[in-house]
Image (cartoon, rainbow, N blue to C red; front, side):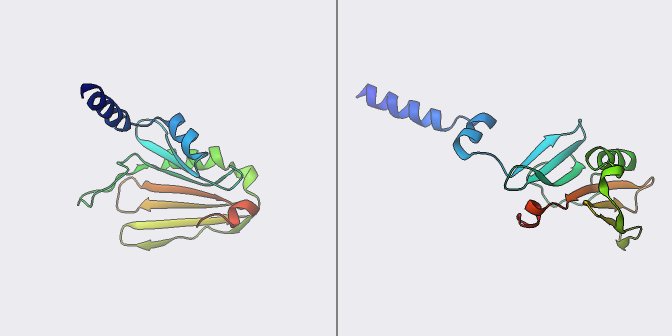
Length: 152
């Protein structure tokens, strides 16, 4: 009687062990979305196309994966860090000709600065009430065929 109980207990314990990244990759295959630590205060989230190429990149302040609604100042990152991110992953020389940009629109403290180029789209979401201005999110979207059909 003890042996079956010990086997059941061992199986229950094994099922409760947290899965590692390699375990999840083995079980489910390549991810279509990943989040990376970009220093102690920011993250980069990458959305992949079907062949594994990056379609969208999001640079944001580090926060809990599951967020709660709480009053207060939103987390932000310095404008210089956001600009460095844009220049690192979408260097100005590789963006192509500027098609539309230079404008912005504002809703309360949120300011959005979209720019469309031949090869990429960028968006800065800025906290317009912060002094100095800080970024809530920087986004890069690559204009490649496989990304046009990826999940929006």
